[in-house]
Length: 398
Image 1 (cartoon, one colour):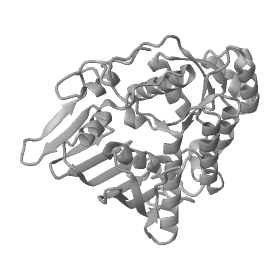
Image 2 (cartoon, rainbow, N blue to C red):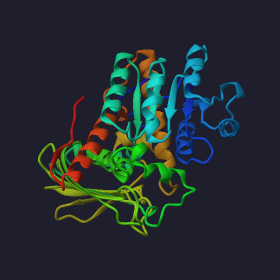
Image 3 (cartoon, rainbow, N blue to C red):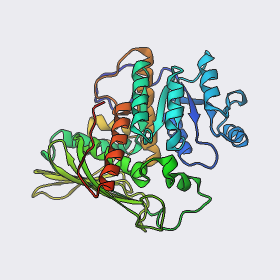
């Protein structure tokens, strides 16, 4: 791969496609399809193997849907890791998109077989398991990345670059909201995703906080460039009665002392996936809303309101333009963000395997360290809520 500068308007063309496997994601699940679509859109991966379900019939049918050869359609992730590690054409990375409680077992198995891992968030359900995965990736010198796709929208990266460049001055306050509505009514017993998300024996100490609160936490850290160091949280059930929280209110403090708030809920009728961030400094403010992802609202003090629209030029920074695929007026949405994410994962893994480093700052993927921080945040929120809303330290540099 050849690079001219960190502001190249296009990603370098791949020399070949990398071989990718999947654990989880078979028929009946949405998340696996999102991952697979992102990998395919990037044009940098061939999906060649999978343990798509522990149900043999589902695994076989799902592999056929995905055009995975019959001899590489597995029902055991352990068998898959062993067999693929032996093959000269074995997978070079695996996507783990199982429920959270399977993340440690699946990711650790492939790391022990010298296979890079792309892992759905949150990293694990316990800090001990998260730190173990970090240890394995470091000891084996392997790539372990976390999937936070919202930060691969072009306008989210634009917001980050503008803030880091001083466009609004020092960050003085920040607010993130992530309301959904699907948890308002009683859970549908046929919806398997709802069942395990509400089961503390499987999902860990939190439900909505681990599910969507980790996205809010990561987005705030990423866009502001400021770690969230402390949190004060309260968990609530605002929809139909359930075992675990569907709503959380959080006060936070950034590393520079600025205050912030995070509100997440799965019980807000009329809200689908309205992840929103607003950041304010002494010179202005920036706002982005996931339901209108191509627009970035920018306001400077005592100046007319501005809206930067996704596309080439017209205020879009050169380093952001490689995430853009179509001219303005031709919509790009969440699938394009997933494609951008899988492009940068491919670049990171190809660089690790070739020994040729990428230019500093060229990609902005989420690492194993980010995964550990997400689990630390979940635990800190649970600690705070259980103690009646006390302040808790929530940042870790593992």
